[in-house]
Amino acid sequence: MSIAHIQYTLHRSGTYYYNRRVPKYANLLYGSFIRLALSSDHEEADSLACRLSKALEAARGDPHHVGYIDLQKIVESAKPRITKLSEFAGEYIALKAIEPKPLHSAVMSFIQLLGDRHVAEYGREDLKAFIQPLLGKGNKTATIRRRVNSIAAILNYAYAELDLEKRNPASRLLIKGEGSDAHKRGTFSTEQLKTGYEEAFASGNVIKLLMPILGETGCRLAEIVGLRTCDFDLEAGLIRITPHAHRRLKTSGSERALPLIGYAHQAMHLVMQQSDRSFVFARYVRDDKVVATHVSNALNVWLKRRFDNLTAHSLRHTMRDRLRAVMVPLEMIDQIGGWSSVNNIGSSYGEGYSVDQIREWMNKIKLD
Image (cartoon, rainbow, N blue to C red; front, side, top):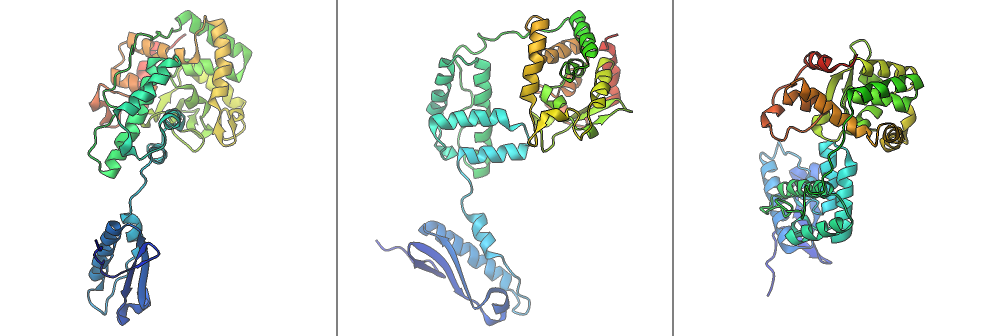
């Protein structure tokens, strides 16, 4: 069966080329001939040739006012875009400007098991096959859920970009025993916080001084370790948590400004006295990257030994409990900690609470 000829094309060595004589009045713009590689696929070449012809006809108009059309860009924009999971993962991370490590780890472990394929090829059974080895290795079900959610987010983004009407195979996926292995993270008592803060000040150690800063702001450790000196306003007594080239934030909602109250303000002032570069914790910025994991390990060694296995992340949980205890509005609690307000869609509207409003509430939990 013969294949119908595509108007204005040549077929050479398996590739279709757009081939068209240019009127003399347009020679200065296009030359005497237009010859442009289209595709080796007949249908795709036909579609591209048609698109180019329409664009040229539209640009021709009045022979005395010929418009220039970038034909190569038309071809590039019309060709199928990226399709593989790894490609969409990279694009998703870049667009969302979020901390790449958790999502990247989930995608890499998924690809190692199931291959880097066209996103439309993954099915329900693939996701189930991804979960089983994780359960077998003893991963917490909460960890597995986060990884599944990461894959689901990328697939949702990919389907939208490719305009695919396909159900996300990662949606409503059950994980055996989910939640039954959950371990409630401990929190610090008021006495433990005061003891730890005083020991940190007495030591003058930058690592230990992180305890009062984390404990009195509720921030994630990487958010504080990645602070630039320009993010700290000593006169106003506040810090700004913003993404930058050396440290992204966990979520887009993590960007915020927070007042430094009591112990946190004192500790930040001491740390700043030891910093002589553009970063507050300059010694932990290496190769243009914030090495928060190193700091976390060092801080947790002290905290676990001194406070019965409590960790730096326990300070974050403690802060949430302290805010609840004085009836801080839920939206403000989420804003202070940079938590996602999953159950409150309206919280994403407007500018949120001001630093002065947050300061007023945080003064109610200030430790003397």
